[in-house]
Image 1: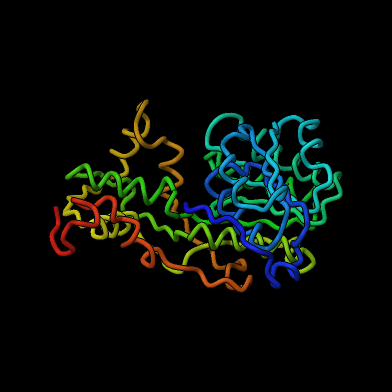
Image 2: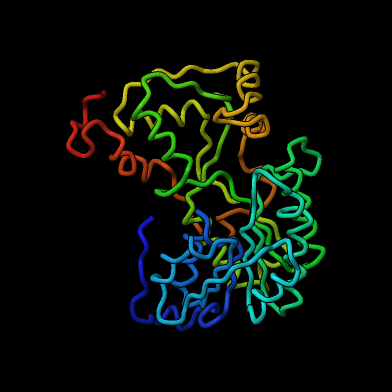
Length: 326
């Protein structure tokens, strides 16, 4: 991700509802947090970026003007730590999540604890980032605790906005770029759940959705949005598109579910059993909830960026021939 420092204050910033407001990003040092920080700073907000490892956010200090970005350490499982970091916040964004460990403490019951602390701090707006696929009856702890976290958030902060993004892509992600790296090195690649359907969404569109919902809590509070891209693709199709953009002629082996399950059950493999189940279930919008369009955002497709992002994974990089595959 290219970090873009702010320049002089613009008229649009001065009139934005978030201008001068203190917005606390919990879990703000991660992939999404870096993009949310840019979206909020562009609106003139003052940011408090809180995470377990504040040093991971040092580069974000350069994005704002003097005193506009504050870094803070927090342990979201400890009420005193939360109260200290949320004090004085006008708005709070909860980006905290995990795939492993005590998921209930972090994104289940823990999400409700965060919302309650935000309410106690007097925050006027609260945005909780969940995920498409959150389901209370799921056998996968990640999906189940995401759903439980949504309920806990709304119980503690009824005017909170719930955002459920699909799998996110960006130039600094660990998704599309990971596949780009793999196709650049391996002539044959296995594909888990090859026909699973995904609806990937550009991370900057999600970041803008967060900024938009924060700026108008009276309009968007208490609602749940599904944030998905404009196109549904299969896992196999996604891999093939990445290979084409990287100008690599690769063989993809579609793994049957049985073999995929055996591999996922082994230690040290690239996918866990729970991750495989989530992938097999797909990751697309239900169509029953409002989405980016209702926030005034036109989702951008992966194809808009893919050719440019795959340049480093081509044979000889940008100096390779456009038509030859290697």
